[in-house]
Image (cartoon, rainbow, N blue to C red; front, side, top):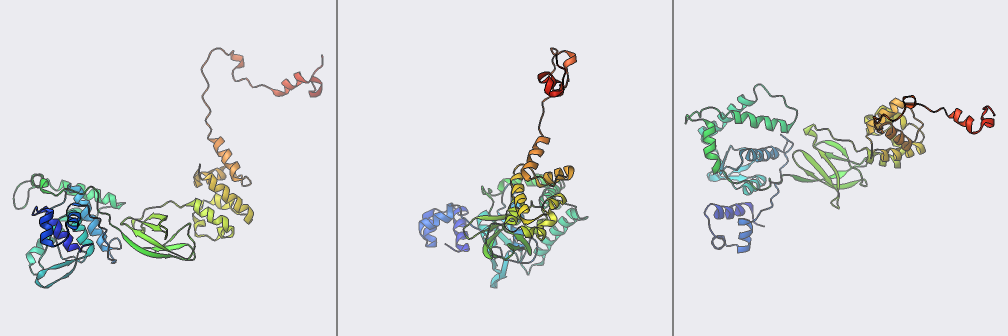
Length: 387
């Protein structure tokens, strides 16, 4: 596999200079199959994000994902991207002003095919121009600070705010920004069919309690022997835990997204069945409804039977529906399958009465007295009158 600068060079020779595969092969010295692969093929690149404390735990995530969203909102990729000397994209500045980019940013640039224009550290006017745009955007959108409940809501709000800001004259050209944008939009590069997959892979260990640490938080992984070694795939908003065989054992939102996740009660009940005495000490006990805690209070054999029945009952009802029924009925002596039958009978549908005029009015809603019926069948046995 070629290094990132060589991949980028082949792409530029193909797309910008319009050279043929044979001409690129002669100029670079690589085999024509290799040149064709990187010039015309879809290059599978997966940025490795360097771990840094900052926005979204890995600072590179915020920059690359933010640019991807901007490209989608614009409907294309700009031919050149001007950036400041930010550490998330630039590793170092060599002699002569040449920049050494991070591997993640190089792969991102190669995938979307844009050129990079970096501000000269010795030219204050260039950096000042970029800082003035940052200052304007901050005053426009974040003073006062907006109140948002989620990251997607913030992205949508910022997009709408910046589209509204186009309805003003350009500070230098005097024309409306919306008109200038409509003229320049056809010059954008076409977007790839799929966004660049951005994630990191890390190894983690499952401790003796069946927990794996992700972003400093403990998550319980079910279905694995402990201790164990797993692979954690992290995207900006979620993570997936894989076993050594490639099976998915946990998929959840990352802690900093503040997204509520559903508790896997069926898996938890299955583990409690093997160790019924841990029910009173488990961390998940506090999340159980009070009625379920009362229902599971008993000797271990009874707890095991009820846990097994509740797991089957969860296929048709939620845990909170079961708890609500127990609170209303106070039937703590029933088995789970009996609770299921009574819950379904409560929600059974009875059709409305037909409107018909054939039944005599004296027989409508008439309730038969079965004792009188029995007396007529067996008058001597039922105490009826003999004739």
